[in-house]
Length: 70
Image (cartoon, rainbow, N blue to C red):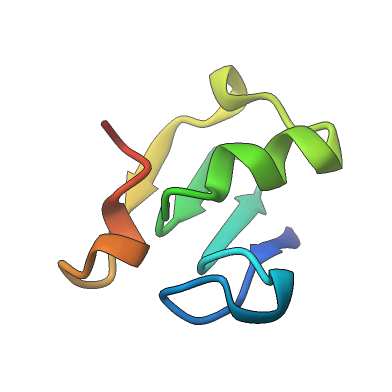
């Protein structure tokens, strides 16, 4: 299993930190934990492909944790 921290900043991206998002690659699946608005920016910076994600888990309904899904 591999964990990639895409972002771990606050809701406003203070200090240039991206909003919370983690990518987990396991043998059976690749999934995203949370998807803030800045997640796709972080994925692009890290060379990660959105189409590789099988499932997205949202921890709670604050915009900085699910706003990037639209």
